[in-house]
Length: 494
Ligand code: GLU
Image 1 (cartoon, helix red, strand yellow):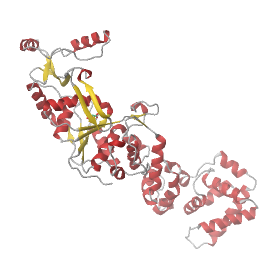
Image 2 (cartoon, protein in one colour; image 1 turned 135 degrees about the horizontal axis):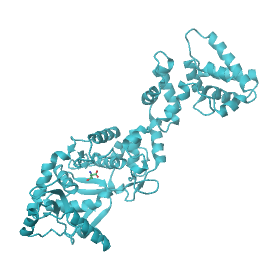
Image 3 (cartoon, rainbow, N blue to C red; image 1 turned 45 degrees about the vertical axis):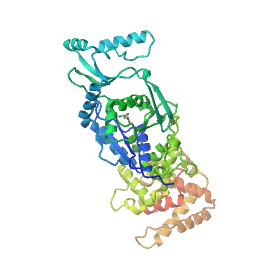
Image 4 (cartoon, rainbow, N blue to C red; image 1 turned 45 degrees about the horizontal axis):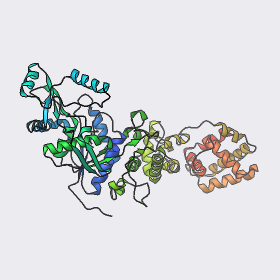
């Protein structure tokens, strides 16, 4: 299926740099990116940094880095919201001039008293529009008192706001449920316009960026109702809206900071691959078409993505599925790429870093990566499982018990002797031991010691890895042999 190219499709991610890139924001980015790619449109970024106290350039860097890491590249230079404040003020001035907005001089104390009275009367808190129709004389009196003012946008209690949401279908809100006339500029001296606020600036910026579709979390639905009124009052073209389901934790509650791992950098530090995380986030709320399976790239998803397959219900976070996907991605890497991923983590432990030592040889490391690859879920597993190859392991209790089995030590002794014999006959400088030779040595040792092959295999594993679990035994042995570590470990076991 190929989608018609519609270059008028322009979507955006509008993160506030008040924290690191949250998984919810990243999932919103995924849906925006997929929709843009599906329609040959553009995926844009706007950094909503107008909250000066809470915004931090370090968070902006973290957000951009996280998106890049996930492969969610944006198509134009990011728009920095704080640089556009004059446009926001101009829109507020326009609304004041057209009578859609007015100055409200109510003090904090008066507003608090109003809300307390509402609470006492068991009413929902709302602004009672008390300064909507002040006479010029009343206004002058407030100004003469030295009062400052916020700017409020009029919301008609009887208005019905409706739109067709790409995820949720027909949506309808009553103006009476929006909390009264809305503040669009913070308190400032009455001849000025204070700092513009979220709903106003989003509308002004989305219109300026010619955003065609606003795709964001369903926690913004009430904002959408307010924003649609602002579009109308400002005479701006309204975009199409799509509100995506929230991400829920295991208990079915909205995923929050309290759930621990929630930022993209956390997942990255835990060893998740960007392809796996992006794949997983796509599945958080979107069902791929029949036959597609659950493992796919962003490009593959983009070829078929649409909002008909986005669910309305919240999406529960499923660690098992994420782990499974990460394993799939790791298993799909060739040995060379896997080595490239693992080597720096090994080096952090000081493993494979001594020049001239065979464990520093990229070819040896590649074989080790190939050996461990199939059992990895996280990259970090490739560190844990590599440890006995770089450091002589202690023997676990199970390994000690195995070596105490009757015939085990004599069999290992026979194997050691046969190995030493074979080595003394090998050409100088050759460290090669082939699988065939190794198999043959094992068979000889079995015969000599008169024990079953199973016993010697288990005992060999115990001797080499210090435990009864681990990857393919023959390859393990050959790799340790190349380091010259097999004989010492065998001797220790005997
Ligand atoms: N800065 C807002 C947020 O991070 C943007 C919401 C929107 O997409 O309009 O929630």
